[in-house]
Image (cartoon, rainbow, N blue to C red; front, top):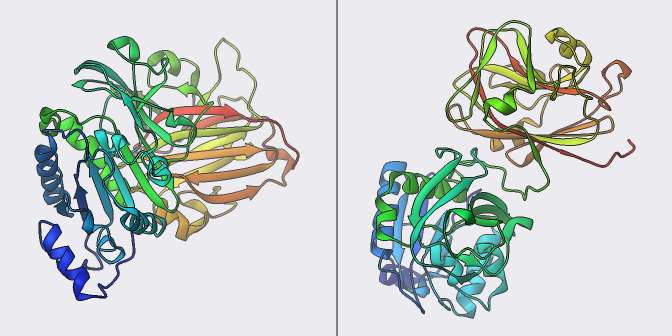
Length: 450
């Protein structure tokens, strides 16, 4: 979601722009992505700010977006902000904007602008409630710089998709005044047992994202040290956050609480699944399942020698990626069986396929109902990038979200295919189809009537 381009309406605004922003002052083109790095400080000043600016410039040069940088709050006018797809608050501290500048930035976000907060961006504007909500949490304290283990909770978001499930790094680890988990989507959290000085009772988010008041927001608590900005893993983390904020990558940034894993990337969790029919799934070292051969299906049977009961009312989330024009799907609502055709004939498939007919392409309830194609196309990441499905079943109603956008709402009327008690499966479609899955999790919901 990008902020719409607007034309500067006064010579005075143009003069401010030229005077306060390093880099070219030309108007933003229709297809040009532009990012403003803002690093004004009214409190503690991090000596890593120059390295941070240089790193974002280099990421922009390699990633196809233009980067301007300023420490002049005069850049925060309605006309000037309209030039940018995202504003990066790079270790800002204290009160850095006046009332008029705050108002311009609020309007920018509400019109679809993007925000990226790095490290001390959480130590900024304590008396401005809008900013506190946008950043997600305010700084409280920090221990000494030291190594710690970061638990990566979401491996589909572009900011964390390239990381392993744990990320060991050295930084200055912030404690926050509140936990953002209830209103933001946590991407990574600190293992407080891996270092000293954590004060968040074992639930310590350190990077998160959210859609906020019409805009997109990403925050990372890392980035105190100069060395961070030369670290390839941190640079990729930062690039992914910027790509999300400017709208070049899609992700589900709704808050996520109460899910339990069905497949968490380990061989142990995979033991609760059974292969039905030909073909197979391989498990890689990074915890990814990839299909081969078929037509078959890997389905969740639960622990024990006999299949456990099916699921009735639930939200199922999983991450998936195609290599190219590949075919797969997620089956729901079928009886326990080692025959994959039982799922085809008695359940429903939420399709994964980039190029088939509308009722048989990504997001469709296969052969029954197409997704909203326009919404689907806007939400879909291309081959080679991760996507997230939420498949929510309540009674006979089946809804599908792609990267946080609802794209299908289907109601079953066929008693043979009742959704009220059924199993979950991942399809391996054929020899030429390679589709990968990660992080299959479920939250069981209260039973509701139709």
